[in-house]
Length: 463
Image (tube, rainbow, N blue to C red):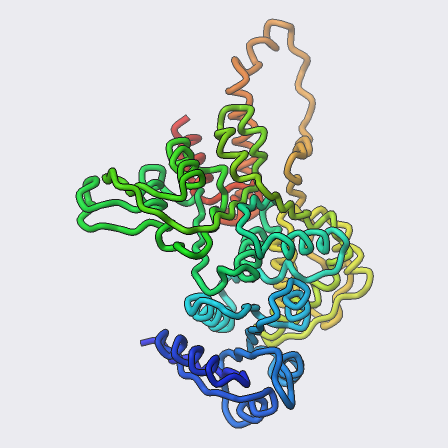
């Protein structure tokens, strides 16, 4: 039986307190209330809690004051901020102050419970496990490129526009989707996230659009798909470039007609869903190569939010490092500080894994640093994985004897596909070597999802 988590909720609105209590108790948590930040601090001194949920605007001591006090006296205690002032600037300010998450009123109860459970899980992960990066971390920073992204998000969020979010792996595409939903009139309805690359091709249509009983072998009951689950809310289609062609056709119909047809049915069902999509791929190039439908691409590209890679906003690295040092220092009970030389060295790196990779480096330093002050010489070596679009560095080897022309012709690959397959094999082998065989991390370095990597490995073994 899992331990019951204790949640402290601070809000001066009795109606909000009741609704938050109801949602969290229904999810199996124990809840204690406080009508302002000062009362919440008194509760914290009297008892221990797993998470604090606080409003920003309260008398006596507001949410920012409470957040600052918690970070100073209880650094390992996650704080989730909720507010009616749904602006990106407010969200960024809360994250810079150390909030674990940020919700705007009104919010769906499932979003609240998911945020609380994520915070509880983050706090309770054993030190022997590898943590995952919290999406909110990419908000940290004040570079011109990041401000441009947030300005677009703030303008587009209140609308019904379909948004295509582009960016390399680890830049925070899902966070942008959460922001777009949370700052929209749909915030009180669900946000349903779907990783298109993780869906089995044979089940994509059933997963997205549902199926009726008897639609296929094993379909013993009717099942609502992800679009129906997101009705009146938002659906986030991550890695949209991995969606198979048959599903692309059906998705286009949904965007055009605002209705779905479950597998095995001939009756369309109307849905009221805002669609957000994300990809690390070049969809325009995929359209030109015949790998993605042009009409679907134009439907998705109503508004484009392009996330800059971390190497293009090095000025944000010190603030990100400070956040990660604080976060993982609290988790592992260790305190470190990076010298200005160490920060400069980190800012000069290429960061193919972006913010996610930076967090992994800082977590490693918190765990293994020998001294509290970390210098440039103590930084782990740079992985050297090429950035997307860059060619890998050649592998040095002794020059072979110069063969005659006939031997050269015989040694060359018979075709372009063979050469490409050999190049792909080498990239995969290098990624697995760098990650010690960890497929999830290797996939992230390669810019593909784990399912795709596993399929490629199976094919390479057959070849």
